[in-house]
Length: 203
Image (cartoon, rainbow, N blue to C red):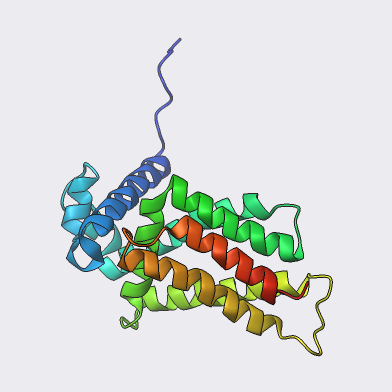
């Protein structure tokens, strides 16, 4: 009877090589930015041929769109674990705490994710549509958290307005950190964001 490991299926090998190429892309994006990284660089950095990423994804825009979705899904997993069982203001603060933890445990993925976000703005491509979908989803999520606050009053308070403030505070903090990471302590800045959110949340 064989005692060796079971051989991976083709789907498993494809998923593994995708993960390795995504990790390689994160390293290259952090080091040199999304513009300079090439599909050939990503393939070789991952330990594969220069042509694998191009063969599988055809263009860098398509690859980056898949990478954005991959990084966003990783973040959503962190977020879902952090906010499980909470509601209202507790959820809002737990979400920012989850981001603080992400900064500490996986800063390169956070850097790469937001560098890609800003890189996509003028592309009018699959990446841009993916980013729009993500931002719309995040605003809706923050609005839902606000509407769960005990003193939420739909007649006098806009959950959507709170969601815009939430995104502006959090994304603005990350933007400042990306521009000047030596000068900005993102963990502390996000702590101040939590203090601000406590003041503007509806109870």
